[in-house]
Image 1: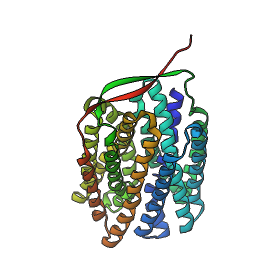
Image 2: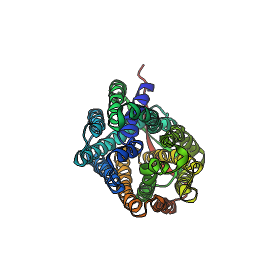
Image 3: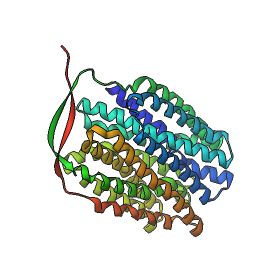
Image 4: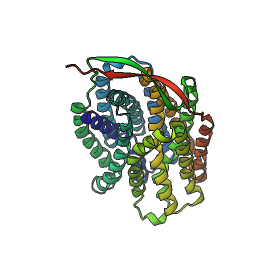
Amino acid sequence: MIKILVGGILSLVIAMGIARFSYTPILPLMQSDMSFSNKVAGYLATSNYAGYLIGAVLVGILPLKKRRKAVLRLSLIFSVITTAGMGLFQMYSAWYTCRFISGFSSAFVLVLSSSIVLDKLAEKEKTNWSGLFYGGVGVGIFLTGITIPILNHYFKWEGAWIGLSILSIILTFLVWIWLKDETSSSTQNKKKEIPAHGPPTKWIPWLIIAYGLEGLGYIVTGTFIISIAGQIPNFNGDATFIWMIVGLAAIPSCIIWSSLAKKMGFVKCLVVTMLLQAFGIVVPVLLMTKIGLIVSALLFGATFMGITTLATTLASRITPKNSSRIIGYLTAIYAAGQMIGPLLAGHFASASHNYNSALIGALFLLSGIRFDNKPVKIVITENIQNEEI
């Protein structure tokens, strides 16, 4: 069980923390050397999220239950290749292609690894460990925050991409041997009524809409926070320090929020995390200083993966028989919001020569709060393992 959990964590480090989110700290390095505009930066981010959207839609509708491990491994290979490709090519068309394929593969990795790990945790009655699994994204972000400045110092931004791809190859080998998709030989279904801190099945569409609005708002900071930090003189060229703070805050956030959800209820915790994130994203608009950016990074890191953990776990609790499909739908609408966010942010930032107007757009997060619902009792079907004597 531990190896499966660690394998799942490392799969998120590779596909999300590195292949997907390393673009944020490397972006200002690329812009400094290649002198491309914020519009181009927004288009590159949007290309990634367009691939993520299409991948999320496909993984939600394709019958992959019996081929999850094989498709997951193939997706990890594409994550490694496209990460290296960003450093090997210096053409916009190649970058757009790499970011698109990277987004496509990362959606498959997120949904399939979530499905495999969450199913195994449910089988072993360890669902409270889901926060450890999603903490893998924070681990990946923290790793990129440490390694990118070092790699850039010796090999520039191209070497940063290639160095991260080499690290990903090593981690992929570990995922390959540890993340197994094995089901118990003997299981029986047992219906169990629980005092669920969540709404009934008919509430799923509202959760999906709220999650999409979250994707639209959070990605502005997720894409441009390092570039924003670079505009503040106090950082003295060490803006990636902010990205390390995001990663450090994200690592324990998932387990903390999932633990709180057991006591407070998943919907209530989702409301709290969205409010905290909205406040954190708006802080730099009100306080464009080093302290303001640090507070923003802490709140952003402490909530963005916590919201993902809460939303996907809530969905899997409401529809335990069809968790892969519902998580796929959630990921798809989230990706749609992410695809729009950087595109708008890039245009706003280029027009105003700062990021304040783009950050104010993160207030869309508050729109998701109105889809809250009161806790009700639900009936779930558990897989109870029969021990053979």
